[in-house]
Image 1 (spheres, rainbow, N blue to C red):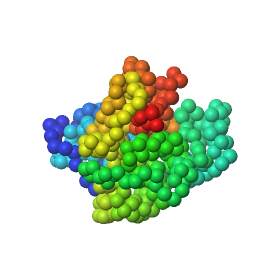
Image 2 (image 1 turned 120 degrees about the vertical axis):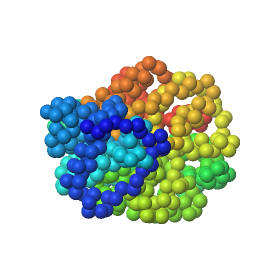
Image 3 (image 1 turned 90 degrees about the vertical axis):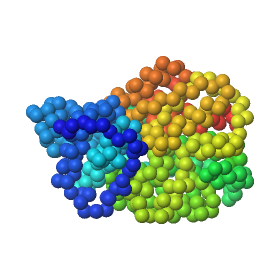
Image 4 (image 1 turned 135 degrees about the horizontal axis):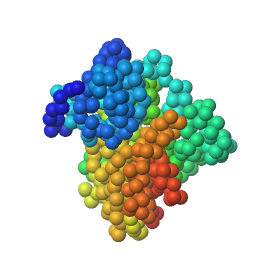
Length: 447
């Protein structure tokens, strides 16, 4: 077992991932690095309460003959990999041995490397490939009539049990609804070919006009939240448009270890976003994972791509953007309605952006509104919570968050990640539905 030493006091730094080199896909090299890192984790155990990856690792060690990592069979290392959904919290909030510490522990990227090797070896399940093909699923399930059929089937318990047994999609998990009248169609009806408001003044790093990367989810599964976003931003005199074309940000494929599909998506999205940046548009997205993809993951995977870096500098979390406007007295605060007690769950992929609790900061400006912030994983992770073999783990991870919601008894609760909010409502199971923070803000404005 590694001797636990004092961790680094410097801010974590991230190395680019050399996923295009041959050595990256060496399984023997992977096992060697996994044993080294797992040994350090075993000696520390600081991350035991984050997700199920670490308890799985420690159980394997504690049940081995040697009570050390060297007593664990290498093939059992994959049990740890399966439970890592790359939330990055261990790297950004817990681990004292991340770079620049000499041990250079990067647990999430080690798990990502393992997933990439498994994908390259053809070990990835068909179910997982389909679940991460969000554009394809949205295009099919978003067709009129088919959307209604899919939404109805998702609510029929006997049929869900068939999906559970045959495909491995949990019969108990919340599945998203699909809308044939998606956000892109709605905006075309609103705008025609023009933008409704003139560009606002620049403020700090913000240009005063925003292109919303609507994402597969906001476009086809939650277009109403996209409409709320546009209403809030236009109320603040910030023009909003969508890119002319967009595809999935690539986070689902990255989490699968499918780097070639990720490259294809990058090569489709980045040129469109660069055109917008060159025209003076800032960029944002309503799914924190999409924001993180452009702000962190793509730059680490394609560190020499200047266009990727240009997009990175122009991308903002939506509440980060409003906070930057507020610092320069450009945020309109003519709130018409208080919200009472509200609870906001800060999603993992927002927290690891290191921007601070911007959602709480903005909502706290609403008079007579008490904001309770929960900084703990919901356990959803896009696909983790819907898989049959992991759903109960996802529920277990969500329970501490749900306990806090029950303690506060808020008038409204929600998450920056709409999927996390729905998962928490499912575990809460009291009939109260989540409300996205941008929807709360629109409600407070009375618009």
